[in-house]
Length: 244
Length: 180
Image 1 (cartoon, rainbow over the protein chains, first blue to last red):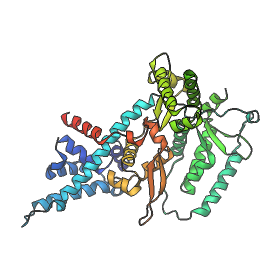
Image 2: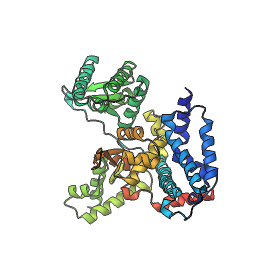
Image 3: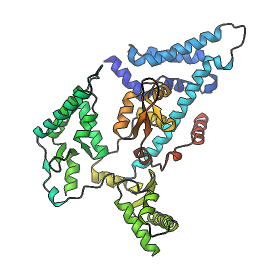
Image 4: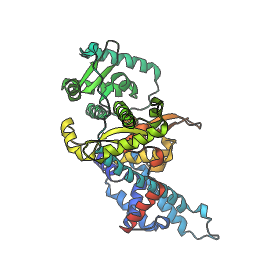
């Protein structure tokens, strides 16, 4: 539980070890080109120490940078006969990486501003399909139709990939959220397309349960416009809006 | 005559699902001189932007499209019963800008630039159709290559990749931050 929480914090506050490093450098108001390694390393380690337990898999990247900082400091302390060539300076590699990363970071701030501005302008992201006579009796698909299509997709998929190494864990709740989000973005989901995209059978199965749950609580609605056409999933309220 | 060309263009933009490019428009409007078409579009845009309208024509994603004016956001949300639009997470946004500025790019390259594993965010972006797979790199492992999609442009209201914030704009922000 503990480690899960620290992971959350990390997601919100620091996107990765470079992010943390950049933050520390900014906090000290230092020029990136001229990092006082000892000070930064100290703060970096302090940050890592704040976590009571370190999940090696997740924090390995952070530890790697901490180790790198210490390595650089130790290199600088060693007396040398000849001064280091510019290229050999381990600091330079780190500085270059940081500068590249900083650019990305700044670009994403600019993109965020654009996103906010664009969100206020609404576009007709889809035109409601024009109702033709024969389309008037759109039929809500039964559970069995859905299950049939689902298992036929999975059968096809199984033949394609048998090389699943490790599966992540998914929960039905997560998948329900994912489906709802996809619906908000794209107004409808093509049933066939959606499940073909799933990576493993387990993932697809859990998504499928999630979808069934959403249909049960009447948040979404599955519709086949014509016989042999693909099944589309809509948010229920969008669907009724479209019909009226 | 001039007036009617403007109306035709208005109708064409209205009915298009994706941003309508000027080339497509010129193809359709073959009986009009291209110069006139361009002029008419400009006038049309001005006309919409002036006043008295809830909608406007904007240039975005390589073409022209209708959008509502920002000031009517509140009422549209009420109609569609949407409380707020989902923003991209900062991880997704960072990954996206890495791709935008370094494309074509592979997952390993993205993760290296960000210093953090980006496979999950990449999947989300693919699902949102903001990026696309354009092939495989000819190197060991043949990793997939990613690029931003057309939807990426419209999402941020950019007309082409050339309109992405430039190096100068980025450095300007950096300067401002320093002062701060």
